[in-house]
Length: 231
Ligand SMILES: NC(=O)c1ccc[n+]([C@@H]2O[C@H](COP(=O)([O-])OP(=O)(O)OC[C@H]3O[C@@H](n4cnc5c(N)ncnc54)[C@H](OP(=O)(O)O)[C@@H]3O)[C@@H](O)[C@H]2O)c1
Image 1: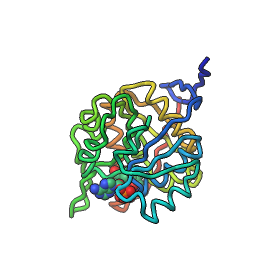
Image 2: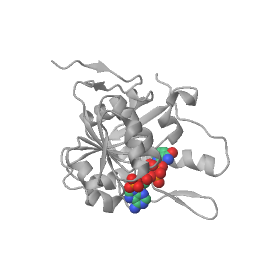
Image 3: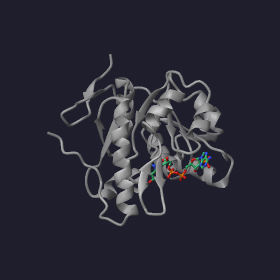
Image 4: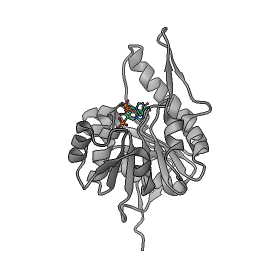
């Protein structure tokens, strides 16, 4: 029998089935976000497979050692084959090409942390995905369950949520409730606070949160973290 538990603390509550089964998580991209989240996923008991353009490089081999729990690295496409969950820890510009090379993603959960931002000489920060990166990714992989997550905080607090000095909310937008529950478990395991904000189309709002978050620092104003107070 599945043990159910409430993991959320706001007016919209979601229920999760816990970590009864370890997932295989393909972390596509070994940069700032991939190298921050991969070790947490492994520490939570999941099998991490990094998908990299250079899986044999010293940097990626070092990341594998740091990750533990028998993590491995291979090509992006091979990493995706046996994965239950795919984290797209990649820039926006090559995202369509990368997703198209990952093979069938039917039934898999795709976590999209991407901020598709456009910076110009006047220091404005625009959004370069219409209607949203998450919805476009869903179009490119129609059989997958895309969940927008992790785009509204900096890498440093992905590495160490406690360093933020208080709770940080991670809004989750997606059309598949079960997929959001699985991602919520990952968020909780990292020490962050998941919040179901509804359908994948609400990724437009979540991506706008990312735009504000980045622009605040880029334009020299007081930086902040998102903590949505439950009521
Ligand atoms: N950094 C943050 O604080 C932060 C916070 C929230 C959201 N995000 C978003 O998360 C995504 C990843 O951010 P990041 O900081 O991890 O980026 P990054 O440090 O630039 O790393 C991106 C990784 O993507 C892989 N990649 C595959 N194809 C690529 C290509 N054609 N060009 C460049 N890289 C390619 C690379 O890994 P391999 O070399 O292993 O192939 C690279 O290390 C971005 O969309 C960003 O907007 C970042």
